[in-house]
Image 1 (cartoon, rainbow, N blue to C red):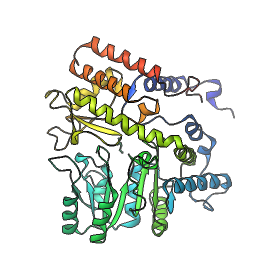
Image 2 (image 1 turned 135 degrees about the horizontal axis):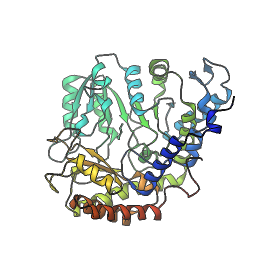
Image 3 (image 1 turned 180 degrees about the vertical axis):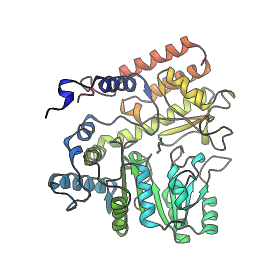
Image 4 (image 1 turned 90 degrees about the horizontal axis):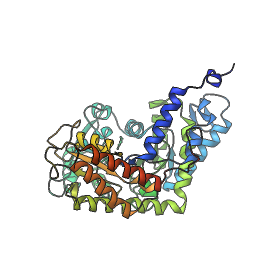
Length: 422
Ligand code: DSN
């Protein structure tokens, strides 16, 4: 039977794909958790591997016909282990959130006490938010950044650990602009006999590129997503000490997931190989240099940077001193109109709700993939400031939008031949 789309192509979807390709490649993509993955990764994700069911693990499947799939997944596992210097890797989690929940199921009992960074101070939903399964199933005690320097306070974490005797301490952030040293977490975990999980979703690419501290030797388990600074396909991964391997594998399948997405796992394998290339080290360091340059230039434009700046791939901009009336929500909308994609973000102890916010989160992984450097970061800061300063002036927004398109044309994300048909 022919596929109906052979004779009647789905122009509604192809038009939408083309529109999104156009949006991504003619405007500045500054969302800290996004990136441009390579054409090789996209080819793997769009491959025939999507046709196959393969519940289980290499050599132990519940379906026939998995000889090739076994080789794909074994290669992805081996590349993940080698890239992260890890004893064990599970490449099946569909997302970072799944990866975290799988680790909790593997290593905790429901009701166990866990320490995690508060969501509104830069943590993640799965670090114990009361509206997330993590917060419903486990007794999370949040730690916060200090009011003074807006950095993680290890004295507070130690005090909380001594008071609550957690079974696990979770490190990891989604909107924290500073380096996260694993050693102090390990020391506190050891002092109270807790496990130590490091959620490296945002900084996995910086870690393997040698631009940020490596948690793998220190943590019992490291979870991460593959699509942020690591620049792979959308998905999750867990690396761990061998002693936790069996429990983690069981928690992923059959605990939380059914059939793995082997086409995505093939994409992860491609991304792990790309990240092992020496050029990726240069890329990771440039992401950080660009973020630093962008933060400095934004500060000169009158914005306040949470914690005073950044030493990773992102910054959190507090809009209140720049314009007390301007919310994160409206700034995001204005910048969208100006061809600059960012996300609204709470600042620590934000007086506004998470749907409104007083801040923006801005990141440099995507523009760094495009080949932009510190000179372009100064230009981008001036564009952001111009759009937000004259946000009611349509002509200013149109002019910034044109500047964004020109910059993207000078630094194309993809070779001209790449299209949605590739
Ligand atoms: N949604 C991700 C981020 O933007 O940081 C976290 O899961």
